[in-house]
Image (cartoon, rainbow, N blue to C red; front, top):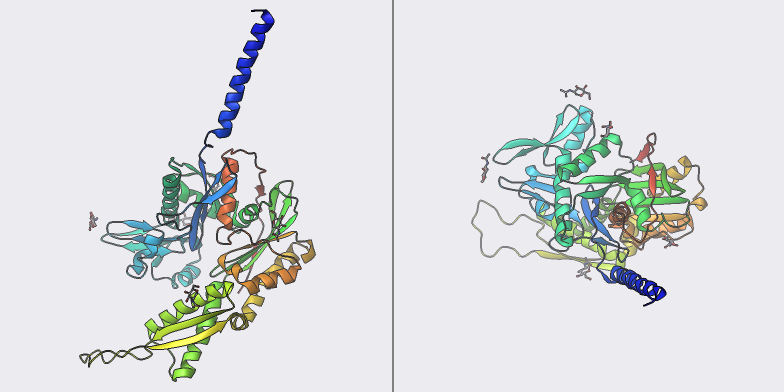
Length: 445
Ligand SMILES: *[C@@H]1O[C@H](CO)[C@@H](O)[C@H](O)[C@H]1NC(C)=O
Ligand SMILES: *[C@@H]1O[C@H](CO)[C@@H](O)[C@H](O)[C@H]1NC(C)=O
Ligand SMILES: *[C@@H]1O[C@H](CO)[C@@H](O)[C@H](O)[C@H]1NC(C)=O
Ligand SMILES: *[C@@H]1O[C@H](CO)[C@@H](O)[C@H](O)[C@H]1NC(C)=O
Ligand SMILES: *[C@@H]1O[C@H](CO)[C@@H](O)[C@H](O)[C@H]1NC(C)=O
């Protein structure tokens, strides 16, 4: 064989090896995600991963496939239960079922404010030199910190991810509200450390929501994020400069959300019962059934023009508790009503209008005209309400971004950031945040 022939054979072998490697890379299963994205919310939590192969985000379900778990942890004499299992005990074990812990994490309280806050809960909140702790009594008595509650929820999500992916997980990216200060961020990291997780980056929730829409990759400058949940409204104005998001202004309303819209519907329905039967519903059980029915109706009205209420009511106590029952107990009456979307919108017109107040504030504080907002991102379940979407699109004269499930927008963005931190291919454009220490959030009530 000639020298040249030998060379060309070696060449072919190298080429073949190269091809095999190339093809192998094409057809081998893509690497498993190693970094998870966590949304530790006040009422719900979610965990997601970025799949490098497909470029998709997957939000991981619990044992029953539910993609959000309630932020509740319940203590019994034998167990600590987090998520749905924890919340299921809220009625039977109210003093030892802790929720809303995020409202307390890393915060220093004045005694008076802490007492005010604690009065709303069935569990006991104590003041440990300005920090909140929860008092738990099972067959032992002890206190737990808000970060411990957070750690149990994060541990639950870590296990959900490990079970689903089949690999151990030690690293994560986590989101926090934009207004969290350094101490609140540190305590959130501590919660993750207690759950055996290293936090590679903490990102703001509005930034995560913007990333869920890929706004870190496209040419936009001003992004407005409206987050309307069950009980609070948060509006943030983000500014993107050279791949970095900066929070320019924040405003919100701590007492406006889906619960208030349901409450208006409940008041209306109770008045209808009073008109029809001459007695207002006062039995706890009746009110509970009415509340469940109006909540269901509210959700249906997002997709349908009207909803039918059918609620069994007793209206009067069942006989005299001291007397043995005389014959069969009285059958409940069936209260029926049709609720139209128009009626729901009328009942809430003033509350819906209040959504624009913090929107106008962030624009004023950011010295920005509404026509200068490039993209509007809607987050939180209550932004599904058609009238609210319309109100916002009419105000800005453009459609908001709504294609991502508003309950999962934050976790989707955090998972994308987790994919970037995990070095996933194909190469993603990263977005970094400029921390803004001096920014204050304006609160309306
Ligand atoms: C509490 O009760 C459980 C079982 O009911 C028991 O396993 C546990 O040891 C008890 N703890 C204490 C401190 O008594
Ligand atoms: C209580 O907190 C203050 C400041 O927040 C600190 O100076 C003091 O040492 C703390 N006391 C205890 C007993 O931890
Ligand atoms: C937060 O943690 C960092 C790093 O551990 C530390 O340098 C900083 O002082 C902490 N800040 C607060 C307010 O606790
Ligand atoms: C809501 O919709 C579901 C399914 O379409 C239906 O079963 C339910 O009765 C509706 N509820 C109300 C209050 O309209
Ligand atoms: C939503 O965001 C994308 C950027 O990923 C943009 O292209 C689109 O036009 C936006 N607006 C709407 C109404 O979907």
